[in-house]
Length: 291
Ligand code: G3H
Ligand code: ZN
Image (cartoon, rainbow, N blue to C red):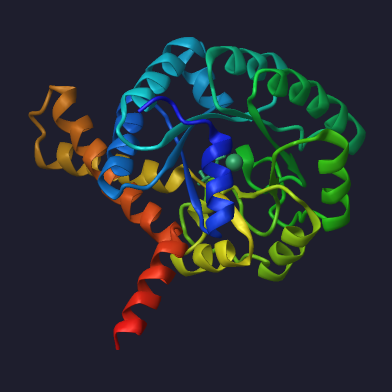
């Protein structure tokens, strides 16, 4: 199936009032694992490459080309997104490389600078039919630099979306990046107010720190795109660690990295099914009708 525009997946999810999984690609095997999860579940997925992951690889184009090729060759609905770009030039290159969406993260800038930089990214992206996600109100914990107590103000969010023309908005509602315990408390009432205040889909970042039940509540309150990275990295690393502990003689990376890839597929599939609250509700209605 050809690469799916992120806008198509987001708008379909909003229409169904359901969640949409957005998982971070670290290297080729995680991208393969995530595409496998989409094919196994029959659910759509966004593969996202962060500016940090691009820096790890030393360049955008090779890892982007691999991710775009996997998405385009999959039988599932897969979109490719640039995550947390603070560098405007990187956002432009992702648009030109064929990404379906870019996140410009000006959240560390003051309001006026964030607006001005986001507008520049939006103008270039929209000229190429690419969707833009932006962030207002720092989501705590990124690189350990931000306080987790920050919240997005609904009135400011409405104004920011109107001024910039962004198509999706990452909001600070209690989650914090890179948590390894799923203990974050989300402000569900704030999510509902933001949902009414802004006309574009809302994005939850730092979802690794949020328990299953709370993620489901957040989707029902108005979150559409759910970003997860650290949680899946933990499954990947734990599986590799387990394999190497059990096989100290191992030298072939395909053996242990393959274990990590299999573990990520299983957990990504479980999360995608969890986020799809609409299908669960529909199944519940059918079951109730049969009683
Ligand atoms: O943009 C990516 C996400 O916000 C991932 O955050 O690693 O805490 O799940 P996480
Ligand atoms: Zn994030």
